[in-house]
Image 1 (spheres, rainbow, N blue to C red):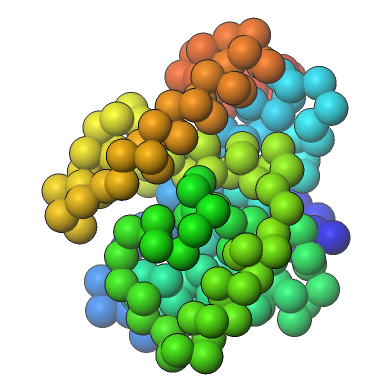
Image 2 (cartoon, rainbow, N blue to C red; image 1 turned 30 degrees about the vertical axis):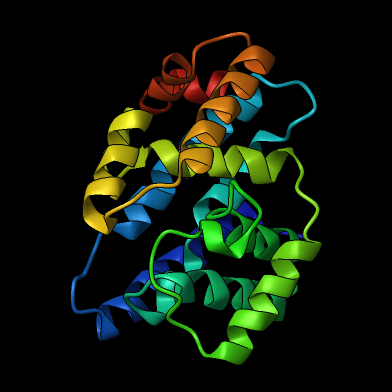
Length: 205
């Protein structure tokens, strides 16, 4: 289950308003989500069997946990819980899996800024998750989504490495595996596809 595009956009706008009430940094995470959503829709439109509208909605909501302010792992936990409470199980799983190209809690880059009980709950849910191509697609799009459009994957990972002090090699390699996987399926280069999202052509793919 996942919401309509109209509902997802309303949820994102409301989340941004709530975030601004509590945030100290006022980051543009919602614009990052829009980039991820548009890239996901453009790629899904080139991959037979994927639903571009579903891909767009899941991309739009993957960071909805930032509604509760700045943080690291807490945005994964709160987003997962929020979508579950609303009955959007597919969106909840994406909130959980988007940060885990490698399906292990120790692969997370950033602070574990949730209570031990919540961390255990999240870890058990992650172990139980069965990834599908939407999980993989949003992981890929998250790795290239800048606030003003798609960016070079390696450059973005280097930026994360610089800010956090490390970037696991298996996660780095997995991102490039995902890139190759969807490029083969779509029959086109990742950036060639994603850069189209800024034009009317993206809706006609």
